[in-house]
Image (cartoon, rainbow, N blue to C red; front, top):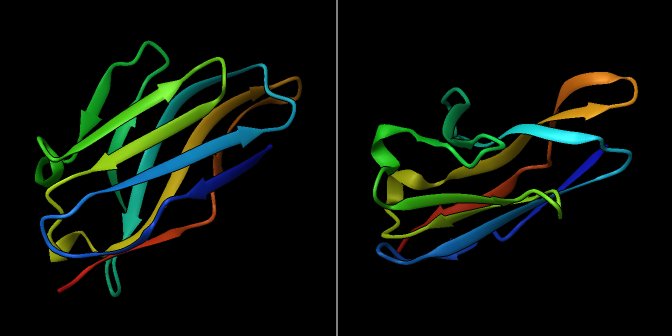
Length: 118
């Protein structure tokens, strides 16, 4: 299983970005999907997650600004980042819980840098 993340970049405060994550390989189903971020000198933290039935969960600082979504048939997930703040600057990672013929485990995508600066 491979995860391909994309969509990061440099944006001014108040701006928007959209991150995408696509899973490929021999996949029977995907359970929870989530976005994490890690800022310099800080631990990786969960930003948002979405269950297979589309129930969502958000870290308090991003509620009302970020929106997570998924497309189950396509094995993809997106994160819309709005009203971005400098403190949102971090490397963002997607994580998915995948069921394969060999079992179920979590997979990480490569990070994508989000920089919020004027």
